[in-house]
Amino acid sequence: MQPQESHSGSRLLDGRVAIVYGAGGQIGGAVSRAFARAGATVHLAGRTAEPVEQLAVELRAAGWQAEPAVVDALDEEQVERHAAAVVEQSGRIDISLNVIGIGEVMGTPLVDMSLADFERPIHLGVRTAFLTARAAARQMSAQGSGVLLFFGGTGDPVRGFGMGGFQVALQAVDHLQKQFAAELGPRGVRTVMIQTGGVLGDTPADPVEAAEFAQIAEMVTADTMLGRAALLEDVGNVAVFAASEHARTITAANLNISAGAILP
Image 1 (cartoon, rainbow, N blue to C red):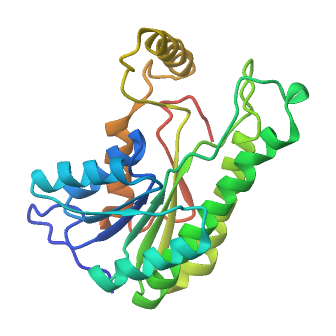
Image 2 (tube, rainbow, N blue to C red; image 1 turned 120 degrees about the horizontal axis):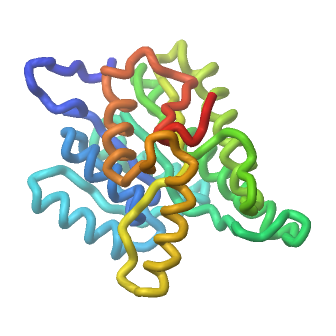
């Protein structure tokens, strides 16, 4: 059974073991910090060593538990081998989240887009979501508990901006998480999609990149009802809630953090 939480002030994820694929990126790093702060042991998986190793040093310096590993989340053998190593080291897998990049090309109209650019995010997005969720789900099924977290946005087509195959990929992954939920619910495993219309990360230091960031931030914020978009810390906070016992009745569901940009 899943470790029971004390409700006398303990951290929400005490005793949990999490894997974050893409932990070296801004969103993956933010969620990893939030998981660690909430008491989880976080296995930081990334395609290159330096970012996840640096994050592990940061988390450990704060007194939190983190284990870095080089994992290509698109490679079936590497994903399975890493999941087995996590279980061997930590005894279980309670949370899995995949936020790796999937090679999307945006800003180009569909009629002008190559087949390769269109289908790349669909193929990579569905492949990596399936591989990583399956690896964690096998262990979660055996232990009788766990949470598969997914990340992305589903909703109406975006007007005035070319999304290529990216939104198609996210819709497919959303259906995938619901299928996992239907099959794994009787085994105590939940699935949740964190749904966003765009997350504002850190402002780039380069002036040109900073100007582009400001334009994107304005576009993302303009579509919201609250006049603000989700920040990295918002993603981390919601991920902690979704993975905790406070969300134990939530499965096959999307937690909408789009600030009103996306309606059901």
